[in-house]
Amino acid sequence: MTTTDISIAAAEAHSAHNYHPLPVVVATAEGAWMTDVEGRRYLDMLAGYSALNFGHGNRRLLDAAKAQLERVTLTSRAFHHDRFADFCTQLATLCGMELVLPMNTGAEAVETAVKTARKWGYKVKGVPDGQAKIIVADNNFHGRTTTIVSFSTDPEARADFGPYTPGFEIVPYGDLAAMEAAVDENTVAVLLEPIQGEAGVLVPPPGYLAGVRELTRSRNVLFIADEIQSGLGRTGRTFACEHEGVVPDMYVLGKALGGGVVPVSAVVSSREVLGVYAPGEHGSTFGGNPLACAVALEVIAMLRTGEFQQRATELGEHLHGELALLAAGDAVDAVRGRGLWAGVDINPSRGTGRAVSEQLMARGVLVKDTHGQTIRLAPPLVISKEDLDWGLGQLRDVLGA
Image (cartoon, rainbow, N blue to C red):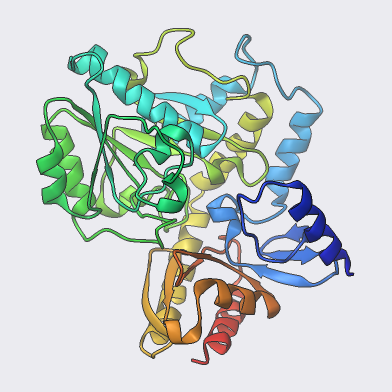
């Protein structure tokens, strides 16, 4: 047996089978490339579901982490530490908001947003206790906690995990009329992904986000934008909402905020909204820890230059131009996306999304399938045009296009 076979067999024997990874065992990585235990190199076209927007082993992020590792890594929120104020100030400024509530994972941040919206509804809007309603979209993916899967429409994520948390209404994504019909006097928030990532990089129709913003403002409802995958440069803007000139009431951030180095997430909003909390009502031992803050501060500094947003814009235009040529043939049924992010629906005659992913892996390109026939392309924003073209060439060859 090879080293790869032994490693995969051990993983299969001793880990829960809650994932179905491709049969590759990564040992090292740099930039947009990963190397497995056998020494084979692979172009990473997934970037950790956007957690690795700045690439593997980004020197600025590693240096920030190493420097902080020598100083202090955790105090808990029982005490202040010297990176916390800068982190909160800089992230609030980046978002054009006032307050930051840091957590660790994206799902924790979504849970925090749900709790915040409910508490705001009771304390500020005056919704009767226990009656708060949050409107979400079908095909959403906000995480996998018991509350979050309660408003999922994905059977794989939801089945067998009940009883489910009440207080959510699901409407079709992109349907503003359905959203308006669902809003009532007890609605405290609308929670949306500006682009639905796990669903296959679904981009809403033009004007949808602006319409949701206008509706929520007029009805005294919070607009919560889950920018965990779509934010921090991925679509060519700092936030995907910016493509429609929209500023939500609350950003939910994660993944790229930790640069692929440590888990960092946050809810960012106004003083009126996040100011509803009193000590002891919500928290996290590791949320806002010194190591996380040090890395996230470097991420924020990198985003302020605009370099990565510009790369996502320029390379994204090239990516979508090449994919449009594929979609003109019979190998691809549809292509969607924005910036350096795309969902590609594979024609069933060319196999499933999983089969195409495995064939690409054999050629040195790593992608991930979703919902049967779709593969997602989300390379690190540091990828070169030459490497991107090489990866797309492998996709064309696999599809026989």
